[in-house]
Image (cartoon, rainbow, N blue to C red; front, side, top):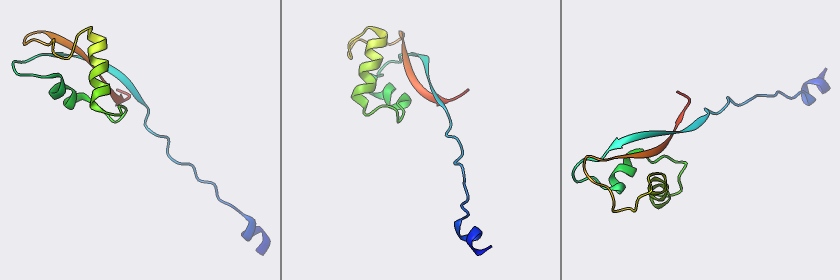
Length: 83
């Protein structure tokens, strides 16, 4: 009996991590907005830095960093758990 207690192991499973998915949303540019300010609101930990995120936003929207204008819309990515 002592041997069975000593050699018995318990197995525990960690709770499954929440599954995150990439989503996109449309943002209307307001007067005075910059891509840096917008990125600061939508960037998530999946991006290594702000430059990587802004580069993706520019690529998605086919724009350069300085090509946003009040009243226009851009699409920005973000990650979230399943909705």
